[in-house]
Image (cartoon, rainbow, N blue to C red; front, side, top):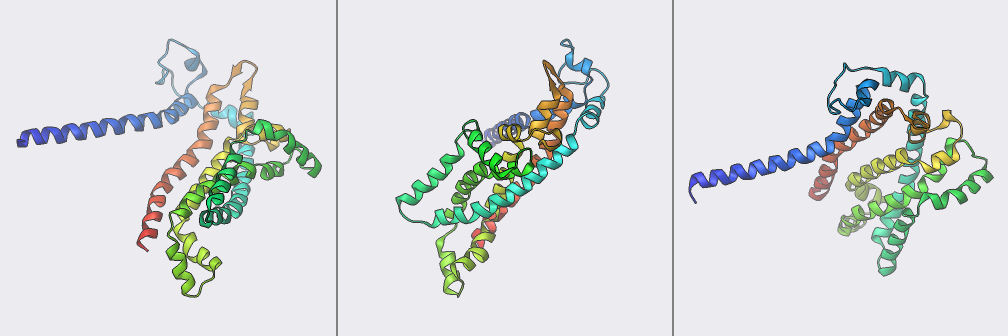
Length: 284
């Protein structure tokens, strides 16, 4: 192979790699671009089919943001979503972390079966469960309260996060725990001082996934909450920004953008932390 041919092949490989990278970056970034441009487009620009939908044909406007913050309780919905999300994540971690570790360390075929059975409960659709849950909430007197969501949401976050953590714990060698127990630690002490630091990447993943599941849930929030001041973002936005056959697209996209960008930024920020967590754990 001549040097020129080798250079041509390397250039072709680099070009192909760059092309694939540009395609996936564009594909993933396009929803955010669409939300941004729709948020600041005028209503006339949005509805005029003769305009280019991907560019500003009229000067940008803040009318959609003004409608969102001045004519709805969007800030209160954000606060409600954050409060419910933090509470549910705390409950999920308290239950899923020890449950995932116990299932990962169990031996025998029945342990694997139990893990699969727990995950299958996550797949039960909310449209089947909201009726019995409504009865439980009525008995407890939690109607139209954010505590009803804090009580119900772990029913799908805990099974999913338990199954997710099982994979992280199974990747941690048992020898590390056994060495710690030989040095004098109890099983619980080895779990706290050895396993938890190594599995930090998995715990961060669980936090993000659990919070994301809470923010996008709709059925339970619509069923158990009736007052607008107690809505979460996923319920309040479509309830107040879809009026009959009129869709306030600009305000809806602004609401989605504000709610989704922090989660996306945090997730991308912790991607490196996930990789670093596994690397540090392996080195140690």
